[in-house]
Image (cartoon, rainbow, N blue to C red):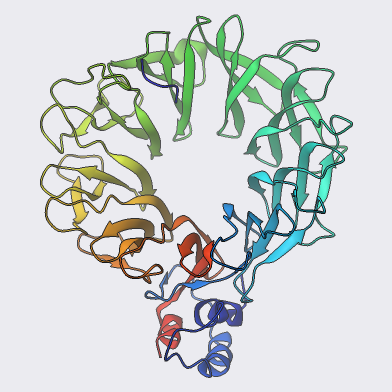
Length: 494
């Protein structure tokens, strides 16, 4: 059975030129004149690009080679928030905008070496919501504007050190939905506008102290879809504006319903395993009578449902977790569905035969799907698709021949794709591409001599692409690559 699965320009220049130090031979005296000249330029929107390989560290949070192991890079208000352990205060919330050579701790919510362990970092508007334990209230919901004074407890839903342990933070419009256990109602659905008064029990699925298991909270066209597990497995749709909810679909108790994926404005795709270890692809058009199965897939579950326009793309046909046969003719390949029977089909058989190309890392940019796949000739490399067989092509063979660069950790920003890949002599390092065939370029070799920096978590904030990477001297810490109009990049290359 398959396993259940607007920053000032001087800030931007400092991000790219100074960081935590300078490379040999760099002339940092140009920073002042470049900053003054570029601050006078009008901002040009939509023309930013990566500024060559000039990534720089933006915070040695924990001195020494151990590193602070940052987690959960999230942009909010032009800054990047993350949790990190500086070796003194424990794991706390940190922030950087690239304007200083060091990231800063937002607040020491739990003084001492234990730390408040911020998690589930989620942006709503320009603020960051997260769950943390300050040692007095237990794990509860907090918000931050990036300052210590503006980092506050939203609501103490369960008094005492046990806390309500909020989970599944999901933004729908101007409200944040989550599950929590207040000690009275069991674990139920709550929502907040960011104030204690505006934090309320939204729906009690199991009245009294008992609980249903609530999962897969998903924003869909201004409403909240979610799954509840009890005597039956139920797909719900909640309208926060009217305070109403309705059932779209019910499956037997032993079923698993998962991978809720909106596509377009009118259809929601999901997978259903009725207890046999294989899944059917379903779609709902927002009404019970318009909720129906599309296709059964033997072997492994369809994976990485990814919306593009009004269709969903995914990998399907691979063998199961314990070797159960999948698609015996094609193996795991790229599929798509527009929510109709005839429109649910394989896009292209990239590697003919039962093994399949096993596409993964699916990411949408400028109306195309980018992913990693293996065609039997080039190894596992970067591909793109417009949804047709003819338009599904290799972007670049980064490790020429049958060897694989195995690209992963994809993220898209303003027409540029960022990812990591492994190549001979460089190990796993950062790359970027505008998506055109033959146009992928390496970032700085952070871990030289064939070692791997393993960059991940790429996110744009202001004029930089931030990410996590490891080098021999600082360990795993946050880095930034300037992401500016071409004229501004030219100043960094002087």
